[in-house]
Each structure stands twice: as C-alpha cells, then as structure tokens.
Length: 406
Image (cartoon, rainbow, N blue to C red):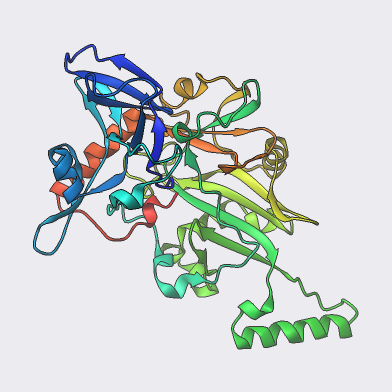
C-alpha cells in the first residue's frame, strides 16, 4: 500500500471533457481529476487528495461531495465519520482523486493531510479465507530480526513522475495480485531466542569447538515470512498434516528454498493462485504458486542490500526459480507506464493489476529512497471497487487484512 500524501502542488494541465459541458479534466502529476469548468487554470496552486483517502464527514459536507464518496466509516450510532475517495468514471472519463483549494501561504510539496484531518483507507475485506493463514495467531509469529528485512514500501508512479531519467535502462514487470512473501538464510543474535533455546545454542557451539568441527553447528537459520510477519516453522507433526501448514512454508518446501538459498541471502516473492486472491488465480487454479521478484544479499560494509536486476535474474536462473513476468526492458520514456500498466495478464485469463518499474542498476532518490514504483490499472481499480461494493452488500466484511498484505 502506498503512503498517504495529501500534497500541495500545481495543476499541470487543463483539458476539455468531451461528454460534459460543465466539467474539465485537470492533470496533477500523473493523475487526472474531473473538476468544474473554469474552476482551475494551469499553474494554479492546489491540494491533491489521492484515491484511497478517507475524508472527514464535516469536510465532505462542507465541500458538498459526501454523496460522491464511497465506503463510509460509521460510529456505533450509524453516523458517518469518514468516506473514501475512489477511482470513478464520470461521463465516460476516469477520475482519480480530488482537487481542493490551497491556502496560498502553503508551500509546494507540503503534506497537509493533518490540516484537513484526512486519513488512509484500510480495506476490511477478505476476498477468500486463504489457505492455512495460521500466522494471524500470535503463536505463529516470531520476533523480527534486523537482517530479515521487510520488502521496500512501493509508492505510486503518479506521485513521482520525474524520478526516472529519460533513457535510463529500466525493468517493468507485471504486478501480480497475491500476497508478499520473503525467505532468508541469516545469522540470528541468540538474544532473540527464548532462554532454553539460547542454552541449546550455547552447548552446540561448545560441542563444535571441543570436537574441532566434527560436531557440525550451522549458525545460519532459514526463515519464512509474509510482508509483516516472521512465521514460525511448522513442527514435524504439523508437517505431516499438510492442511495445517502455513502457505508461506508450503511455498518454501515446494521450491526447496532452504537448500537453494545462500547464507546471507534473502529472496522476495508473490504467492498467488487458488485461495489467495479471489478472481485472480492466474496459472494456479489447483494450488498456490509463487513468482520471485527481488533479492537481497549481505554487503560487508553496508549490510543487506538489494541486488541489481541482472544479479537477481542470474540467481533465479541458477536456482530454477520462476520470476515475475517481464513486460519491458529498455530505455525509459514517459509514455512507458501507460503502455504497460493495463492489458491482459501474462500468466492468467484475466486483466493485469498493474506494473512495477525500477532501474536495472539499483539507485536511490533523495525524496523517494530506493527507486522502485508501481502503477495500478484504472480498469482493475474500477473492478476492485465494484467487487468491494458487492462484499459490503452481502455483509462479507472482515477486520482481518492479511489477504491484502502485498
């Protein structure tokens, strides 16, 4: 999920709306919004409120837009507290976000969400129970270890349209609609373990020294996790009963990752298929599969770092691990994203969720951090919104969220 930024910025362009005399299309960054005709001009300082923002009821009423917002959040008395800004189609034209008037004393790039009381929308839907999601319970969660890193928080390309350089070599891959997984072999500080485990590790080290290495002690531990959780390895009895093994460990076993990964190496994958995301099973209608999309390794000076694309691709080839579908590799130009964010999936009989773009050679940007961005198809967002509405009508909402954890 992208970070919520309600930003002060300028209108890049005003275009006519072909199907509505009283409306216009305002372009802000990489987004387009439907606005009232003659309300704004190119270069005006405005506030852009992105999709998946939750607008306080008092503000939406003041602006007269409550009836155009979705997924209201209510208090126990049924009163609306917040409503959601979504991708919509107005008179045949996509609109993504709201444009509000800005105080002219505010600075460009200033984040004013707290001034307006706007917050991020958090989905409350679970399209599927998912297979064996037992890591939702505390007994299946382990502490997070410093070198077992969560994946980069990927922002939306439309917020950072100037990050990529014209002609820079980039990779664009299909964004798979699944759940994020990570696997690593790292050394763990014994202080993270319970007392009895620490005692056991201590005696193993002593035995290794006393036998001059004849008693083998491997200081590296293989770990599996979702985006947010480091997940306990199933016990031997549990492993004999496949129906109670967590899906992340099933994938680890399926691809033999414990034996394939090097020490001080972490792989990131998207698990998808039956039971993971409803309507998006791709080429896995019978059991979950995964596609790998990134790699970290330990640098002697800086710790765990992301590998350049060619190194990652080489490791996947050597280890016989399936990669995410590659849509494009070559020089960057501004129209690339619109060409590749939509269309059919390369591994499924349904639409593409979107795409992810990053440079072939890893680099950082002062505003963004690691340079990697995503762009979601408008067609997918409209489809997703329709299905969420159906979930609300059918009463199938849930406070649990891991199914969206990608």
